[in-house]
Length: 222
Image 1 (tube, one colour):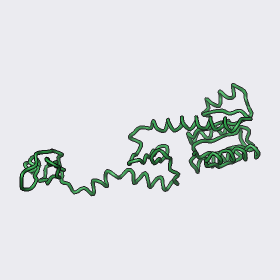
Image 2 (cartoon, one colour):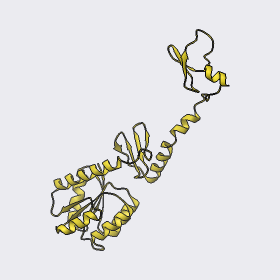
Image 3 (cartoon, one colour):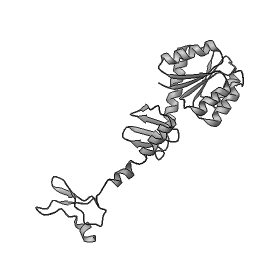
Image 4 (cartoon, rainbow, N blue to C red):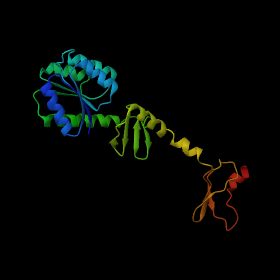
């Protein structure tokens, strides 16, 4: 399932695209002008944009340039223009794929699947230092994406910010709740079957027959 923005001024084509994408379990929003498309992208997160070139207020090629100025969302051009030079120019300008009308819904589905695979693969290449992981939760603050066990979470901006804040604090929260002494103090270790491990320095030694379990290195340096 993907979040899709359809930018198409022809009401018949627009309705057909919405119906097909909705039947395929995608979440769809649609607009009929370039300025509306820019407004949508500025306020909502989409997985892919299907962009017609013959828009009433602004040519789609100019709309593509403006979209690329504010987002890296994958864009599939859908238009009746079939000039090869135009196709090459738009791909070089930032389009991710190009469909010439008329096209079948199966063709559109295949192109969308390919674009989404590439986009998600690129997202997976983000530096590990920028990605937060807590169990099955994966948060990419740069791309503002959150996934749980591989499934994308649909979050509001406020929910995403809160989740990112909390996910970035588990280590500090764990430390706050850990009363184990630091190395250099007189430390009572935790019990294992035949050995003790010091929570202060991590050292292990044979279990004594009786008496308290005292880490010798920590006790000596106390």
